[in-house]
Each structure stands twice: as structure tokens, then as C-alpha cells.
Image 1: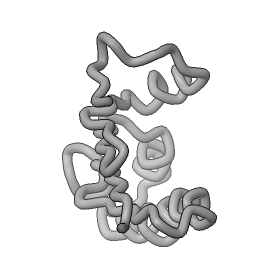
Image 2: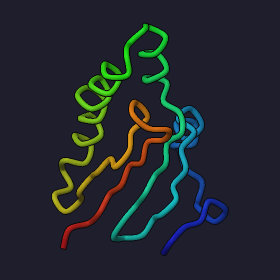
Image 3: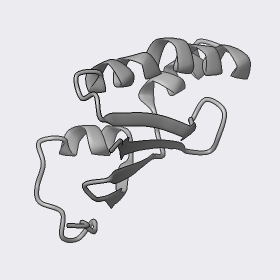
Image 4: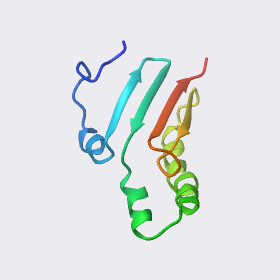
Length: 99
């Protein structure tokens, strides 16, 4: 089934959703899309004075691999980040199930 934000069941991920200002905009057996509007890690990099290029590198080389590693056991699930907060106004995390 496809869940809306109103009909989605409660989750233990609620604190993370709040900290990262996340919203699941699509959730089906074949695909999911999560929009992330805030990242405490990127904010910390900014506070440390990292340039945009440095933030992009830290995001893509340090943070994103953790997400890929979490899904590595699921061979049929492909993870993509068409946007990230280091380079864009939002981060978009997508999963797709391979056939």
C-alpha cells in the first residue's frame, strides 16, 4: 500500500524524522522517496567553516556510504541520492526494488 503522512503507522524513527526534518513522500513495495530538509551533520560542517565543495565531499564520501552500507544486505534494493543538502536545498533519498 501507499502511505500518506496522515495514514502512516507510528514509528520509532520519529525522533530522527524530526531532527532531520524528513518526510516520506512515496512508499510502495517497488519504490520509496524520502525528502530531508535538515541535516545536523551538514550544519556542523558549515559551523566549522567548511566550503560548499568540502561539505559536498564530506556528505558523499563520509555520510552517504553509511546509508548504502545499511542497505547492502538487501541485494534487490538500489539506493540513490538525486539531491543532497550539501549541494542542493533538500536531500532526496530514493530506494528502488530490482526485479
